[in-house]
Image 1 (tube, rainbow, N blue to C red):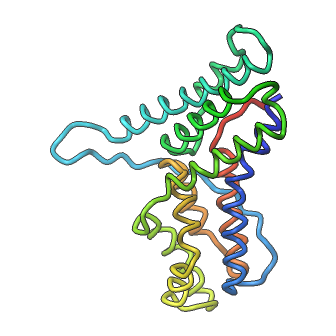
Image 2 (image 1 turned 180 degrees about the vertical axis):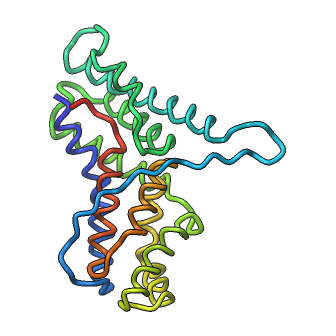
Length: 233
């Protein structure tokens, strides 16, 4: 019964990707057939906070678990509304243990907005009307988690480095195109990712081939963005 919610939830996220791909195409970034590239995960690097014994990766993991719990609480409320009973949601443990590539802020904002929409919504939540509200929440969350331009530097370097090596544009020309309208889309997508998502995205970008860079960038992003919000299968 979560299928309609899944389609609408990711619709707003993928809309950003479609805009990104169209922008690359308009900028003339290649014209070869789209490659089949899935984002590849990479182990996160552990860096100690200077002057302390605190492991930031552990703190980050705890924050992600807390945010995932907020998301699971929302899904359980949705389950109760749909079934009309107060029994424990059968998929709750699976949800809590799930690890996604969403940033904690992205999860919290999407869950809070969707929960508020649910509480205001009368009737069956598995309808197009409520699904549209969830889609709006996803879009709003993307806007809210947009990162600063400095944080997309590694991804810009990977994209423009590939284009320069392929002779499709100079590095400076590519950076100029990204700055003229493409960067905001990357800033939203990267802002929605946690450390795992960002590293997977960077690894995928470093393996781009020559031709149709825009489609390949979208292919790197799609599996990450589609998996940001855990939903039962």
